[in-house]
Every structure is written in structure tokens, then in C-alpha cells.
Image (cartoon, rainbow, N blue to C red; front, side):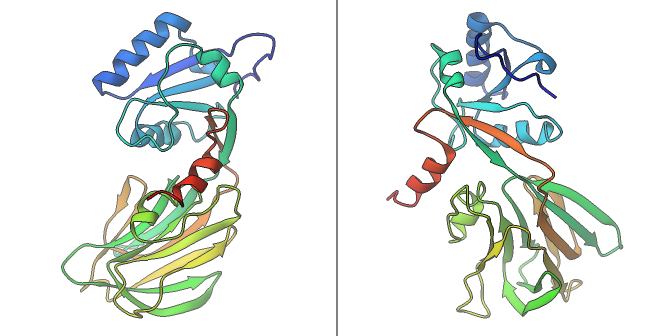
Length: 262
């Protein structure tokens, strides 16, 4: 566990960067300005890259309590702060924090093997061929939808609601809302079903119907399991990750503003 920062001194910073040239150049500049503390002794990890790199950094530190402050040296950067080299310790000291909890996916494939993975954004079920997928959906052991014919479906956290979920026309969820989104992807039947908001402690079970004829993959962020027959998804609140955002630009504010973007 990282040592709590002393408010009387600047935070000790560790720096990691994606392979992009801009990120590597930024890391060299920041290390030159502030030094580079080993992660085990650091107060804050500074991640330089885009949203994909931020997810990678979070996945690698699921057992760590080290807060992560991202700066955008990638493309989208929704989870990142603006890149400004000067005054970094003061920005971090004044930053607002957001705690996020990952989803745990338990997927069983056609051979009966069980696969477990964590997702910070979402767990998605996706058809693998030209055939639509057929899914049966249960919540907390009770079947809620006997048959969903679709390209797939996903379960997302509030933090992940502005990612693939938003592209699939799912709802944007405030970061403090204690709900998960269940969103269909290109639904064919039932035509009017557009998904559901679920309590944060809900356990979502997918049964893949006609799995031999209509193969489906389950994907937890960047971990894919092919030819699944059953998938269970729930939020793992035993794991908490802390992201830091510049004052006035919290994750809650970003998610709220995203609902009014045109």
C-alpha cells in the first residue's frame, strides 16, 4: 500500500507512459522536472497516454492503492487531464478523486472451462459470425428476458458508460449513481427493448442459446473468451481504484457535460 502523502511536502510522483512518441517525450520532460519515484514509494502515479493506456495502467495495478493522475498524450483522453508540464505537484495536490469498481466476468466456454476477468469499462457479449446471437438474460437468478436476438449485449460501470455503451445508445450514468447499465447491441427482437438500469449489486447472467450455431465471444475490456455458453457479470466492490482529476474537471463533471455535448 502506498504511504499517504504528507500535505506539508509536494507529492512523490512516479511516471509511466505509452509507447507513443508524444507520451515518451512528455515522460522525459516530467522526470527532468520532478524526478521519478519508484512506484512502491510514490504517492501518485502519473500516466501519460490516451484512454486505452489509462485502462492498461489501471488493470496492471488492480491490487494497488496508488491514485492515478492521467495526462493526455493520446487521442481521446476522456479519462485524462490536459497535458501541462509546469505546476504539476500543485495540480495534483488540488485534484478531485473518483473511486471506481471493476466488473468481474465469469465465463464458461463450450468445453466447460471457466474464465475469470475484470473489466473497468464493460463486459460485452458479441456475435462471432454472420448469424445473430440469441441470449437469455437473468438478473439475480430470475429470468427477465427469455430470448434476445441481437449482435450482442453489454454490462457497464458508470465510469464505462461513456465508452462502448454510449456508442450502443446506452445511458450515460453519473459516477456516483449506484447502478449498472445493461445495454443491447443492434437488437432485432424484441424490437422495443432498449436495455435496463440495474442496482450496483445485481448479478447478470447470460445464457447463449444455440451456441453451436450462433457462437458468441465475451470480452472484459481487452480480455476475450470465445465460444462461451454462459457468462455471469457483477461489480466487484472489494476492488477500488482511485483516479485524480483537475479541480473543476472531475469525472462526475465530465460525465455530466457529456450528456449535453452536440
